[in-house]
Length: 235
Image (tube, rainbow, N blue to C red):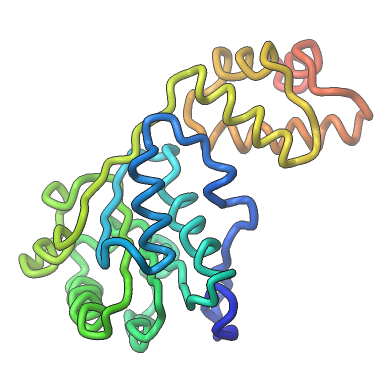
């Protein structure tokens, strides 16, 4: 693993997205969630947190942001997207309890997998004993997951449970305008609103579209305007 001065990375390609930070997250109605996650990442909040939200609301972004927050404080951290790791042995969780912060994403992916459910249950217990921090994310509240192990269901509710709310259309327009600025180009309010009202309202889809438009505009040496979007997207 990496040094104690940086977010931990597994030797299997799991890494943090550099732009996935609290500063790049349009908070909307999620001020309390972000505050609780920041505190946990800094080691001064809840020991256990569970966040949930539908696809595209930003749970994965927030978990990675927590890992990035831990970095300058020299707190060891790891991001574990279970949807990508489910094909591996849960033995990879061994020793994770010694890290200051463990962020487990996509918990719904292991529902019904006895070996993985038991491994996550034991990780909870070990982290509690070591007095480190665990943040878990899923697409439903704990009691609505199809987890078969009752003891794991109870562990998932040990700490604070928070839902991550979807942004309204105005918030989504502001969010993609902010993402565009991070990528190095300007997106006017009019263009941002056009994208939100004419494309998928899923933030993940909007961000992928933004990436496509950015690359296309660079190749064409043109600004991202409504006529350019219509041409590129075939609308």
